[in-house]
Image: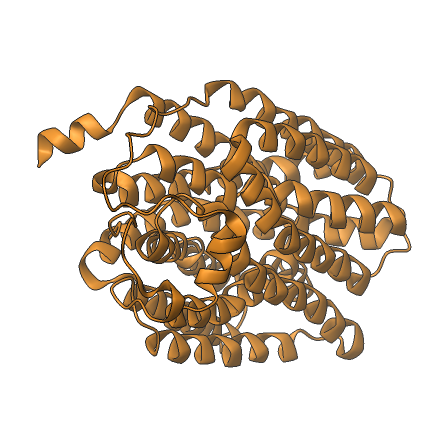
Length: 417
């Protein structure tokens, strides 16, 4: 119903979507640009590639562990407080990492930035948008958020490389810390939605985070999707952390790494919108499996062809289309199975698996290079893990398949796709 859909785009939803898009764009752009600092840090300090990789692994593990807690805080107290705290942690983390010491890198670039990203990424921001959006426009709103969230990478990665070239890498990291403060300013746009309507007869009241997590852990689709989500983190964080250094040892100039990261960001906007469109027609499970399969195929091709500027940028474009395109189907499955009331906590639990994969992708990538002088073991691992995830995801149900303790549909919001 076009008129009903138009009325669903309330001023509160639109303004909050703009704020969430700015915050997500800054958060993802800053984090995905950190790989540009590997070469200058290794050259100018006693830090090794393996050390940097482990710090990024700590960052992703802290993000994963912190995500359920940040999501639950957002579900209970709202997103503004969570983002304000996270923005402060982000700036402090970048400032400490700029010290060039091992402690500063592990504590700032690892732990603090990991917790900061947990409060400024999808688990919190998609939950805010989902609660404001009606089922008629929820999938579209989430797709728009995930798409705009990648645009910061398109701007921040080249800007960071430019600052490194013109200044020092330490000054460039301080510049990124100042950008992190803009996330706090964006929270001024957040708006509350209308008060919930009185419960109808027979409706089930919203469950709390602990009960919702217990319910989700009894659902087969949720469990399989959570396990497969490991591959997403393993692949993406290996590439975000080690691609600039990999193409550098292949003889390409540093600017190509910045261009590749920026291209991932801009192409992701189109890929994420396309994924949201396909989810409404093919189902969330099928789109997720297809994303894992295509992403793995792109990695395999890039691994076997000669590395050049052209092949690197083509690979970056392909990965960009598939980068955050998992967000619409994953959020669609969660909202369809359990509704949006406890989205932050449930997404956080699922995302922990993603971040365990991210931890291993960043860390093992650095170790494989340190031990062998090559990233070949890492690339092969990405192909194996991605193939397993695609096959595994195809065995899951979709939001129509509700079994176990989560099997009841009473009181649950309609599926979003």
